[in-house]
Every structure is written in C-alpha cells, then in structure tokens.
Length: 106
Image 1 (cartoon, rainbow, N blue to C red):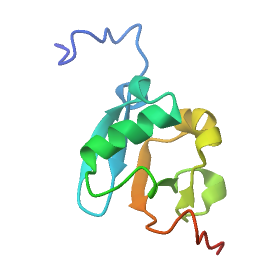
Image 2: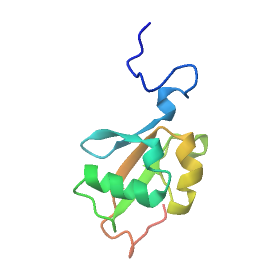
Image 3: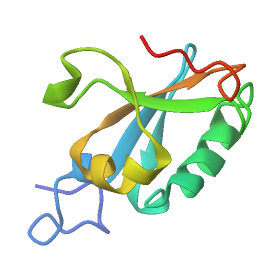
C-alpha cells in the first residue's frame, strides 16, 4: 500500500487528523497546520491571511466540538487556546465588529 504522504511514516506518526485543523467562516473552509498555530497570536495571524474580511480587533474563534459546548458555538479565549487546540478539529471564524465595546453575554 503506497502512502500519499511520504513524509509521514504511518508507523511513527499520529493520525493525519491530529496534524491539521479546519477553519471555516461564512464563505470558505481552509486547512491549518496545527504545528503552525500552537500560540493564539500565530493562529490569528494565519487566519487573517485566509479570511481577509476579518480584522485583528474583531476576530473571534469558536468551536462546538467539546462535549461541554452542548452543540453551541462557544468563543475560545486566547489564554485557553493551548489547552483547547489539541482537543478539537474544527474552528469557526467570525467577526465581532464591536467586540471590544459591546460584548454581550447570552
């Protein structure tokens, strides 16, 4: 059986899903290499390259994949990113235009 990923020997490496995240906004989805975004600021910088309509001030990253989310999309605070990152495979990128001045708790 031939591997399509010669740089990833199957016997030694983690499953492919562990290497990548999928980031999605209202229009597109894109693969992100997990090793490139261990720090939240690196994640934001990379996402701004892919989602050009979003700004540093307004970007919000969410997930609904943890059991505690109960299906809701929940904001991921920057300080929790290192803990949450290994547990999820998909993130949702949204823009809160007035996030800094009007953060509504629902």
